[in-house]
Length: 302
Ligand code: PMV
Image 1: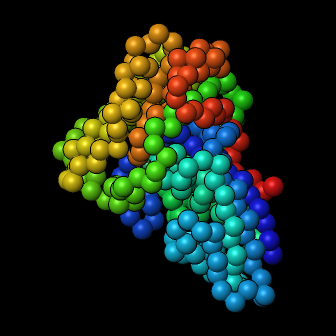
Image 2 (image 1 turned 30 degrees about the horizontal axis):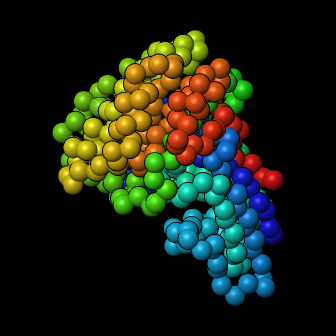
């Protein structure tokens, strides 16, 4: 009873920040993302009578992972111990949504190893209970997450975009997203954010349909800054940016090249551009450590 899965990280254009149900990890608002081709997690899950206890690769949150496995074991009515070996292609917990690719790969590998035949929708729901944004790493390409699960809006080859991820700091972030989100209601800016989101989501979906890059980029930046304003006005406030983060935001804002930024719960900057501008951006960022991602398929067994 063994399976290996690979799952992409994803970058959200419309962000998930705050839950309507803490335990079920249901989001306060829908979010929209793109799977990343290079930032991936590969996970092998094996259940066996030979094992006397559960083990997880070092450096990962084994308690949270085993809690997720326990849920799947119960579903499959299996009591065997598990060995989990998992590897990220990128630094963990630095705002590259490692929990998204991690829990997506874990869910797909474990359900396959347990012989549970599940639909994409079911896998997305299960991945969500491990880490909210993980549900968006199950379907292909460009994805929307509403309430319980995520689904594909467009396949990975719909629009040849790039996510040029600038690694500002690869160290562990101080406050986890799970902890940070708990205080979202202390921000006086949350009601305005929630009121603005339906209109913003409709606008970005239209820009995606029309492949209107300028419109799309402007909305994505507006959304990133809005989420960070909420984080920064929570009690206690959360500041994920460093001086370098702001320098890169300033550089992109000059629009010498058509590109826009977005930032998750960490200091690294995702610069989104069309494929035709990739080389010019690499030149502009020549002294920086970067990872270049294309839009990608969702989680799968390998
Ligand atoms: O699901 P989590 O705990 O990885 O939360 C992700 C939160 C953000 O990355 C900040 C936003 C998002 O939608 O990805």
